[in-house]
Image (cartoon, rainbow, N blue to C red; front, side, top):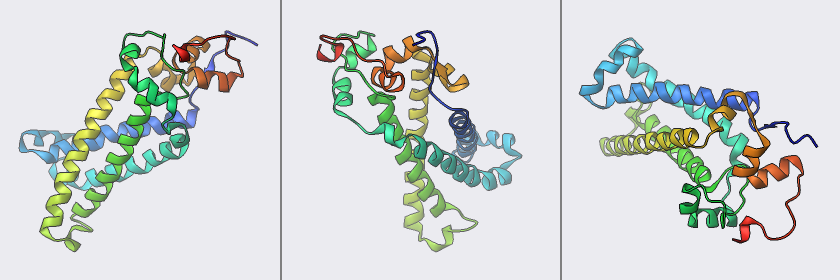
Length: 218
């Protein structure tokens, strides 16, 4: 076995899908902020003015959701919470201090990444449904004023949670050295994979764990 050979973490299609969602998120987020409060209306200049911002925002949101579904189809199986994940969460203090003792081995994603995945999916669904209800050009005329007001509140709340979640996602990606590079060029070192995602590493490489006590039993 070549112990220096890197491991493919994300394919070109997966990386392209991810960055398309990221770009659309930025565009939908900025256009949404421009429409959210008069103090931010100057952001409409990025989209050709107020009318164009109002026209483009819902289409950007729908496109973001469609491409995000592509990520869900690719990764949902790897994001189910396991017993190791629950133990990982209980020992998050050790994880934050980068201490391996007592921290269970995890698969392709840790519990924090999995919780983020499901949070993003929930927010995207709320944004889609509430956005469709408020879409004046096509659907809003079919709903009463109380429903429109509720949709507006839910839309803003889901957007707020989504933005906070993405900030956490970006911070974690920078904090864990090598994560951003993996989404840029797709590859990670064997040492990185073994340290951060041991179960995934052993599944991909077929490398067996050492005999005797492991860090999972700490």
